[in-house]
Length: 155
Image (cartoon, rainbow, N blue to C red; front, side):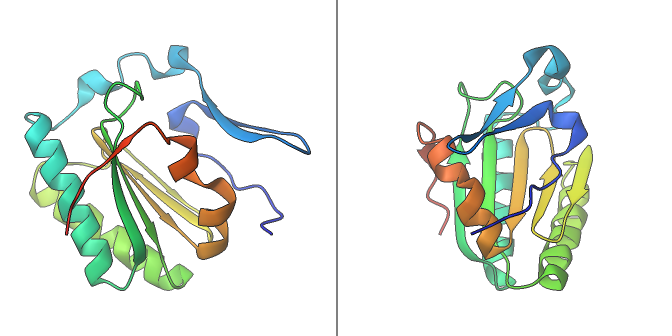
């Protein structure tokens, strides 16, 4: 079981509420005001295509259990989540670096990057990429947390 709490990115307004039986994220919309309006994506297809490119890149660089989730209408801060499980801290960082480079060439600039040995988060505004270590992926279980989100076929 994952025993130590991870630091959450300050910019996202997320807070981890934890007691012996409850682990979930809450989003303070006051701190997120106007975040989406800064989106570099030209339209919804651009964001979706970029999310798919991030998923493909993750899979091609030995990440496993890669998923793209459409959270439009569910999240006030982003349209897509890309979730991936890395094999080591070094590999996770390399994937994040490459995604950041690819994003920059396509007009998707990282507005925030949070690096932890168990969880790397890249915030491209319209697309948020989560690269987890296996233990952290199971512990935080974002697929269940965002269970109402549609899965995007990317393969």
